Image 1 (cartoon, rainbow, N blue to C red):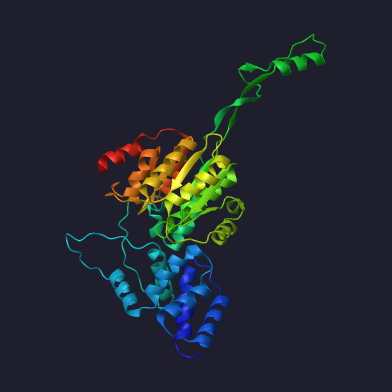
Image 2: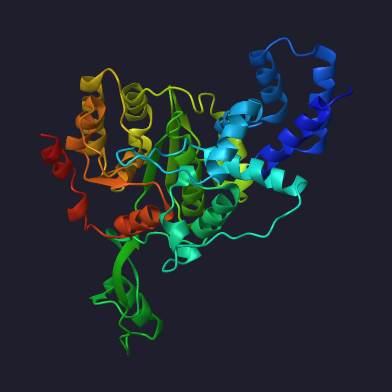
Length: 399
Protein backbone atom coordinates (compact mmCIF):
# COMPACT_ATOMS: atom_id res chain seq x y z
CA UNK A 1 0.00 0.00 0.00
CA UNK A 2 1.37 3.39 -0.95
CA UNK A 3 0.44 6.89 0.21
CA UNK A 4 0.07 8.42 3.65
CA UNK A 5 -2.63 6.07 4.98
CA UNK A 6 -0.15 3.43 6.30
CA UNK A 7 1.78 6.21 8.07
CA UNK A 8 -1.43 7.53 9.58
CA UNK A 9 -2.41 4.06 10.78
CA UNK A 10 1.03 3.64 12.35
CA UNK A 11 0.77 7.07 13.97
CA UNK A 12 -2.73 6.23 15.27
CA UNK A 13 -1.51 2.91 16.72
CA UNK A 14 1.35 4.68 18.51
CA UNK A 15 -1.13 7.16 19.98
CA UNK A 16 -3.27 4.29 21.27
CA UNK A 17 -0.21 2.68 22.84
CA UNK A 18 0.69 5.96 24.56
CA UNK A 19 -2.89 6.16 25.86
CA UNK A 20 -2.53 2.77 27.55
CA UNK A 21 -3.71 0.22 24.97
CA UNK A 22 -1.44 -2.81 24.35
CA UNK A 23 -0.95 -2.29 20.60
CA UNK A 24 2.10 -4.03 19.14
CA UNK A 25 3.79 -4.07 15.72
CA UNK A 26 1.93 -7.24 14.71
CA UNK A 27 -1.41 -5.49 15.19
CA UNK A 28 -0.27 -2.58 13.01
CA UNK A 29 0.86 -4.94 10.23
CA UNK A 30 -2.45 -6.84 10.39
CA UNK A 31 -4.40 -3.58 10.26
CA UNK A 32 -2.56 -2.32 7.18
CA UNK A 33 -3.00 -5.70 5.49
CA UNK A 34 -6.73 -5.70 6.30
CA UNK A 35 -7.19 -2.19 4.89
CA UNK A 36 -5.30 -3.23 1.77
CA UNK A 37 -7.45 -6.33 1.33
CA UNK A 38 -10.88 -4.92 2.22
CA UNK A 39 -10.52 -1.24 1.44
CA UNK A 40 -12.41 1.64 3.02
CA UNK A 41 -16.11 1.64 2.17
CA UNK A 42 -17.26 4.00 4.89
CA UNK A 43 -16.35 5.67 8.17
CA UNK A 44 -18.21 3.25 10.42
CA UNK A 45 -16.86 0.18 8.61
CA UNK A 46 -13.32 1.56 8.87
CA UNK A 47 -13.82 2.27 12.59
CA UNK A 48 -15.20 -1.24 13.21
CA UNK A 49 -12.24 -2.81 11.41
CA UNK A 50 -9.69 -0.79 13.41
CA UNK A 51 -11.53 -1.63 16.65
CA UNK A 52 -11.52 -5.35 15.87
CA UNK A 53 -7.76 -5.38 15.19
CA UNK A 54 -6.43 -2.90 17.76
CA UNK A 55 -8.71 -3.35 20.81
CA UNK A 56 -8.54 -6.53 22.90
CA UNK A 57 -10.41 -5.55 26.08
CA UNK A 58 -13.85 -4.09 26.73
CA UNK A 59 -12.52 -1.36 29.03
CA UNK A 60 -10.32 0.02 26.22
CA UNK A 61 -13.28 0.82 23.97
CA UNK A 62 -13.94 4.36 25.37
CA UNK A 63 -10.29 5.29 24.84
CA UNK A 64 -10.37 3.98 21.27
CA UNK A 65 -13.59 5.89 20.53
CA UNK A 66 -12.10 9.15 21.80
CA UNK A 67 -8.89 8.65 19.81
CA UNK A 68 -10.78 7.80 16.61
CA UNK A 69 -13.04 10.84 16.87
CA UNK A 70 -10.07 13.17 17.41
CA UNK A 71 -7.53 11.64 15.04
CA UNK A 72 -9.57 10.73 11.97
CA UNK A 73 -11.33 14.07 11.82
CA UNK A 74 -8.39 16.25 10.91
CA UNK A 75 -10.28 19.52 11.03
CA UNK A 76 -11.62 18.75 14.46
CA UNK A 77 -8.18 17.61 15.57
CA UNK A 78 -6.61 20.88 14.47
CA UNK A 79 -9.36 22.83 16.21
CA UNK A 80 -8.64 20.95 19.43
CA UNK A 81 -4.92 21.63 19.11
CA UNK A 82 -5.52 25.33 18.49
CA UNK A 83 -7.88 25.49 21.45
CA UNK A 84 -5.30 23.85 23.70
CA UNK A 85 -2.34 25.92 22.52
CA UNK A 86 -3.97 29.35 22.09
CA UNK A 87 -5.04 31.43 25.11
CA UNK A 88 -8.61 32.45 24.40
CA UNK A 89 -10.52 34.67 26.78
CA UNK A 90 -13.66 32.97 28.06
CA UNK A 91 -16.94 34.86 28.54
CA UNK A 92 -17.66 35.92 32.07
CA UNK A 93 -20.82 33.82 32.37
CA UNK A 94 -19.46 30.78 30.53
CA UNK A 95 -19.74 27.49 32.40
CA UNK A 96 -16.62 25.39 32.66
CA UNK A 97 -17.15 21.95 31.16
CA UNK A 98 -15.16 18.87 32.03
CA UNK A 99 -13.59 16.75 29.35
CA UNK A 100 -15.12 13.43 28.43
CA UNK A 101 -13.87 10.33 30.19
CA UNK A 102 -10.59 9.23 28.65
CA UNK A 103 -10.17 12.38 26.56
CA UNK A 104 -7.19 13.60 28.59
CA UNK A 105 -5.29 10.37 28.00
CA UNK A 106 -6.00 10.45 24.27
CA UNK A 107 -5.06 14.12 23.87
CA UNK A 108 -1.90 13.55 25.88
CA UNK A 109 -0.92 10.62 23.64
CA UNK A 110 -1.68 12.44 20.39
CA UNK A 111 0.22 15.55 21.41
CA UNK A 112 3.13 13.42 22.56
CA UNK A 113 3.30 11.79 19.14
CA UNK A 114 3.10 15.19 17.44
CA UNK A 115 5.97 16.54 19.55
CA UNK A 116 8.10 13.52 18.60
CA UNK A 117 7.79 14.47 14.92
CA UNK A 118 8.50 18.15 15.35
CA UNK A 119 11.64 19.79 16.61
CA UNK A 120 11.15 20.81 20.27
CA UNK A 121 11.03 24.52 20.89
CA UNK A 122 12.05 26.26 24.10
CA UNK A 123 9.14 26.33 26.53
CA UNK A 124 8.01 29.50 28.24
CA UNK A 125 5.22 27.87 30.25
CA UNK A 126 4.77 28.92 33.86
CA UNK A 127 3.57 26.60 36.62
CA UNK A 128 1.09 28.47 38.78
CA UNK A 129 0.63 25.60 41.25
CA UNK A 130 3.38 26.84 43.59
CA UNK A 131 1.84 25.52 46.79
CA UNK A 132 0.88 22.02 45.61
CA UNK A 133 3.25 19.11 45.10
CA UNK A 134 2.85 16.51 42.34
CA UNK A 135 1.62 13.99 44.92
CA UNK A 136 -1.10 16.36 46.16
CA UNK A 137 -2.24 17.05 42.61
CA UNK A 138 -2.42 13.34 41.86
CA UNK A 139 -4.38 12.67 45.06
CA UNK A 140 -7.09 15.16 44.12
CA UNK A 141 -7.26 14.61 40.35
CA UNK A 142 -10.34 12.95 38.88
CA UNK A 143 -9.73 9.41 37.59
CA UNK A 144 -11.53 10.17 34.30
CA UNK A 145 -9.30 13.19 33.62
CA UNK A 146 -5.95 11.49 34.23
CA UNK A 147 -3.38 10.97 31.50
CA UNK A 148 -1.79 7.58 30.87
CA UNK A 149 1.26 8.47 32.97
CA UNK A 150 -0.93 9.70 35.84
CA UNK A 151 -3.00 6.50 35.75
CA UNK A 152 0.20 4.47 36.03
CA UNK A 153 1.23 6.54 39.07
CA UNK A 154 -2.25 6.17 40.54
CA UNK A 155 -2.07 2.37 40.18
CA UNK A 156 1.30 2.37 41.98
CA UNK A 157 -0.19 4.54 44.75
CA UNK A 158 -3.13 2.14 45.15
CA UNK A 159 -0.70 -0.78 45.48
CA UNK A 160 1.03 1.07 48.36
CA UNK A 161 -2.24 2.09 50.02
CA UNK A 162 -2.88 0.92 53.57
CA UNK A 163 -5.79 -1.47 53.47
CA UNK A 164 -8.56 -1.36 56.11
CA UNK A 165 -8.20 -3.26 59.38
CA UNK A 166 -11.71 -3.88 60.68
CA UNK A 167 -11.09 -7.07 62.69
CA UNK A 168 -13.98 -7.87 65.05
CA UNK A 169 -14.08 -10.15 68.12
CA UNK A 170 -15.95 -13.42 67.73
CA UNK A 171 -17.57 -15.81 70.22
CA UNK A 172 -14.66 -18.23 69.86
CA UNK A 173 -11.45 -18.06 71.91
CA UNK A 174 -7.78 -18.52 71.11
CA UNK A 175 -4.72 -19.18 73.32
CA UNK A 176 -3.17 -15.94 74.55
CA UNK A 177 -0.42 -15.70 77.19
CA UNK A 178 -1.55 -12.15 77.98
CA UNK A 179 -5.27 -12.91 77.99
CA UNK A 180 -7.58 -12.09 80.88
CA UNK A 181 -9.53 -15.38 80.90
CA UNK A 182 -8.22 -18.68 82.30
CA UNK A 183 -8.43 -21.66 79.98
CA UNK A 184 -9.55 -24.25 82.55
CA UNK A 185 -9.34 -27.29 80.27
CA UNK A 186 -5.82 -26.50 79.07
CA UNK A 187 -4.73 -25.67 82.64
CA UNK A 188 -5.88 -29.13 83.87
CA UNK A 189 -4.04 -30.84 81.01
CA UNK A 190 -0.83 -29.00 81.89
CA UNK A 191 -1.13 -29.89 85.59
CA UNK A 192 -1.61 -33.60 84.77
CA UNK A 193 1.85 -33.69 83.14
CA UNK A 194 3.48 -32.92 86.51
CA UNK A 195 1.22 -35.15 88.56
CA UNK A 196 -0.81 -32.22 89.86
CA UNK A 197 2.05 -30.91 92.01
CA UNK A 198 2.11 -27.60 90.11
CA UNK A 199 -0.66 -25.72 88.41
CA UNK A 200 0.47 -23.84 85.30
CA UNK A 201 -2.32 -21.45 84.37
CA UNK A 202 -3.20 -21.13 80.69
CA UNK A 203 -4.97 -18.05 79.42
CA UNK A 204 -7.15 -17.30 76.44
CA UNK A 205 -8.70 -14.28 74.72
CA UNK A 206 -11.56 -13.76 72.25
CA UNK A 207 -10.53 -14.58 68.68
CA UNK A 208 -10.72 -11.73 66.17
CA UNK A 209 -11.67 -12.17 62.53
CA UNK A 210 -11.84 -9.89 59.50
CA UNK A 211 -15.46 -9.76 58.29
CA UNK A 212 -16.19 -10.31 54.60
CA UNK A 213 -16.17 -7.37 52.18
CA UNK A 214 -18.49 -7.63 49.19
CA UNK A 215 -18.14 -5.12 46.32
CA UNK A 216 -20.94 -4.76 43.77
CA UNK A 217 -19.62 -2.53 40.98
CA UNK A 218 -21.33 -0.83 38.06
CA UNK A 219 -19.46 -1.20 34.73
CA UNK A 220 -21.83 0.78 32.49
CA UNK A 221 -20.47 3.34 30.05
CA UNK A 222 -20.63 6.25 32.51
CA UNK A 223 -18.80 4.29 35.22
CA UNK A 224 -16.14 2.29 33.34
CA UNK A 225 -13.23 4.74 33.89
CA UNK A 226 -13.84 4.79 37.65
CA UNK A 227 -14.53 1.05 37.91
CA UNK A 228 -11.22 0.22 36.23
CA UNK A 229 -9.22 2.04 38.95
CA UNK A 230 -11.50 0.70 41.69
CA UNK A 231 -10.74 -2.84 40.51
CA UNK A 232 -7.05 -2.15 41.20
CA UNK A 233 -8.04 -1.28 44.77
CA UNK A 234 -10.10 -4.47 45.08
CA UNK A 235 -7.23 -6.53 43.68
CA UNK A 236 -4.88 -5.24 46.39
CA UNK A 237 -7.57 -5.79 49.02
CA UNK A 238 -8.18 -9.37 47.80
CA UNK A 239 -4.45 -10.14 48.01
CA UNK A 240 -4.15 -8.89 51.61
CA UNK A 241 -7.19 -10.48 53.24
CA UNK A 242 -9.55 -13.41 52.87
CA UNK A 243 -13.25 -13.34 52.08
CA UNK A 244 -13.33 -10.45 49.61
CA UNK A 245 -16.00 -10.98 46.94
CA UNK A 246 -16.38 -8.81 43.83
CA UNK A 247 -19.35 -8.65 41.48
CA UNK A 248 -19.67 -6.57 38.32
CA UNK A 249 -22.94 -5.60 36.70
CA UNK A 250 -24.16 -3.68 33.68
CA UNK A 251 -27.18 -5.39 32.22
CA UNK A 252 -26.30 -8.66 34.01
CA UNK A 253 -24.45 -9.72 37.15
CA UNK A 254 -21.01 -11.40 36.94
CA UNK A 255 -18.93 -12.83 39.79
CA UNK A 256 -15.24 -11.93 39.18
CA UNK A 257 -13.90 -12.92 42.62
CA UNK A 258 -11.82 -15.77 41.26
CA UNK A 259 -10.41 -13.59 38.46
CA UNK A 260 -9.17 -10.97 40.94
CA UNK A 261 -7.24 -13.63 42.87
CA UNK A 262 -4.58 -13.72 40.15
CA UNK A 263 -1.33 -12.45 41.60
CA UNK A 264 -0.58 -10.25 38.58
CA UNK A 265 -2.97 -7.32 38.18
CA UNK A 266 -2.85 -7.45 34.37
CA UNK A 267 -3.82 -11.13 34.36
CA UNK A 268 -6.60 -10.38 36.86
CA UNK A 269 -8.11 -7.56 34.79
CA UNK A 270 -7.76 -9.59 31.60
CA UNK A 271 -9.69 -12.44 33.25
CA UNK A 272 -12.36 -9.95 34.38
CA UNK A 273 -12.71 -8.51 30.87
CA UNK A 274 -12.95 -12.00 29.39
CA UNK A 275 -15.67 -13.06 31.81
CA UNK A 276 -17.78 -9.88 31.53
CA UNK A 277 -19.79 -9.56 28.32
CA UNK A 278 -21.56 -6.23 28.99
CA UNK A 279 -18.65 -3.90 29.80
CA UNK A 280 -19.34 -0.20 29.05
CA UNK A 281 -22.89 -0.98 27.98
CA UNK A 282 -26.21 -0.15 29.61
CA UNK A 283 -27.15 -0.60 33.25
CA UNK A 284 -29.95 -2.37 35.11
CA UNK A 285 -29.34 -1.85 38.81
CA UNK A 286 -32.59 -3.28 40.17
CA UNK A 287 -32.54 -6.62 38.28
CA UNK A 288 -28.82 -7.05 39.01
CA UNK A 289 -29.34 -6.57 42.75
CA UNK A 290 -32.33 -8.93 42.58
CA UNK A 291 -30.07 -11.61 41.09
CA UNK A 292 -27.45 -11.01 43.78
CA UNK A 293 -30.00 -11.21 46.60
CA UNK A 294 -31.46 -14.38 45.16
CA UNK A 295 -28.31 -16.33 44.27
CA UNK A 296 -25.38 -14.92 46.25
CA UNK A 297 -26.47 -13.12 49.43
CA UNK A 298 -26.66 -16.25 51.61
CA UNK A 299 -23.28 -17.45 50.33
CA UNK A 300 -21.17 -14.31 50.84
CA UNK A 301 -22.96 -12.07 53.36
CA UNK A 302 -22.45 -14.21 56.47
CA UNK A 303 -20.21 -13.18 59.35
CA UNK A 304 -21.19 -9.51 59.47
CA UNK A 305 -20.23 -8.60 55.93
CA UNK A 306 -19.71 -5.05 54.70
CA UNK A 307 -21.14 -4.31 51.25
CA UNK A 308 -19.71 -1.60 48.97
CA UNK A 309 -22.20 -0.57 46.28
CA UNK A 310 -20.29 1.17 43.46
CA UNK A 311 -22.73 2.88 41.08
CA UNK A 312 -24.07 6.29 40.06
CA UNK A 313 -27.63 5.19 40.84
CA UNK A 314 -29.07 6.49 37.55
CA UNK A 315 -31.87 3.96 37.07
CA UNK A 316 -34.50 5.25 34.66
CA UNK A 317 -37.27 2.78 35.48
CA UNK A 318 -38.25 0.35 38.20
CA UNK A 319 -37.59 2.63 41.18
CA UNK A 320 -39.91 0.59 43.41
CA UNK A 321 -38.11 -2.65 42.54
CA UNK A 322 -34.75 -0.96 43.12
CA UNK A 323 -35.81 0.30 46.56
CA UNK A 324 -37.06 -3.17 47.52
CA UNK A 325 -33.84 -4.89 46.47
CA UNK A 326 -31.58 -2.33 48.19
CA UNK A 327 -33.61 -2.66 51.41
CA UNK A 328 -33.29 -6.43 51.21
CA UNK A 329 -29.53 -6.09 50.67
CA UNK A 330 -29.25 -3.71 53.64
CA UNK A 331 -31.08 -6.14 55.91
CA UNK A 332 -28.72 -8.97 54.90
CA UNK A 333 -25.42 -7.25 55.74
CA UNK A 334 -23.90 -5.47 58.71
CA UNK A 335 -23.10 -2.27 56.82
CA UNK A 336 -23.97 -0.94 53.36
CA UNK A 337 -21.70 1.77 51.93
CA UNK A 338 -22.67 3.48 48.68
CA UNK A 339 -19.80 5.12 46.77
CA UNK A 340 -20.83 7.36 43.88
CA UNK A 341 -18.56 9.29 41.45
CA UNK A 342 -21.31 11.87 40.92
CA UNK A 343 -20.51 13.34 44.33
CA UNK A 344 -17.42 14.92 42.76
CA UNK A 345 -19.70 17.69 41.45
CA UNK A 346 -20.29 20.58 43.83
CA UNK A 347 -23.84 21.05 42.59
CA UNK A 348 -24.89 17.43 43.04
CA UNK A 349 -28.44 16.96 44.30
CA UNK A 350 -30.26 13.72 45.06
CA UNK A 351 -33.19 14.37 42.71
CA UNK A 352 -32.98 11.38 40.34
CA UNK A 353 -35.55 8.70 41.20
CA UNK A 354 -32.93 5.94 41.27
CA UNK A 355 -30.75 7.85 43.72
CA UNK A 356 -33.71 8.67 45.97
CA UNK A 357 -34.74 5.01 45.91
CA UNK A 358 -31.32 3.84 47.16
CA UNK A 359 -30.45 6.54 49.72
CA UNK A 360 -32.93 5.60 52.51
CA UNK A 361 -31.42 2.11 52.85
CA UNK A 362 -27.66 2.77 52.90
CA UNK A 363 -25.52 3.53 55.95
CA UNK A 364 -23.02 5.82 54.21
CA UNK A 365 -22.97 7.85 51.00
CA UNK A 366 -19.41 8.64 49.85
CA UNK A 367 -17.62 10.02 46.77
CA UNK A 368 -15.18 7.83 44.84
CA UNK A 369 -13.42 9.72 42.05
CA UNK A 370 -9.77 10.19 43.10
CA UNK A 371 -7.07 8.72 45.31
CA UNK A 372 -8.02 10.90 48.28
CA UNK A 373 -11.60 9.59 48.32
CA UNK A 374 -10.29 6.02 47.97
CA UNK A 375 -8.05 6.52 51.03
CA UNK A 376 -11.04 7.89 52.95
CA UNK A 377 -12.97 4.75 52.02
CA UNK A 378 -10.17 2.62 53.53
CA UNK A 379 -10.44 4.62 56.75
CA UNK A 380 -14.22 4.26 56.69
CA UNK A 381 -13.96 0.48 56.47
CA UNK A 382 -11.74 0.49 59.58
CA UNK A 383 -14.06 2.61 61.72
CA UNK A 384 -17.75 3.33 62.21
CA UNK A 385 -17.41 7.13 62.11
CA UNK A 386 -19.59 8.30 59.25
CA UNK A 387 -21.48 11.33 60.52
CA UNK A 388 -20.37 13.52 57.61
CA UNK A 389 -21.56 10.92 55.08
CA UNK A 390 -25.03 10.25 56.46
CA UNK A 391 -27.39 9.69 53.48
CA UNK A 392 -30.17 11.53 55.30
CA UNK A 393 -28.26 14.78 54.77
CA UNK A 394 -28.63 14.41 51.00
CA UNK A 395 -32.28 13.50 51.24
CA UNK A 396 -32.95 16.61 53.33
CA UNK A 397 -31.11 18.83 50.85
CA UNK A 398 -33.15 17.57 47.92
CA UNK A 399 -36.44 17.86 49.80
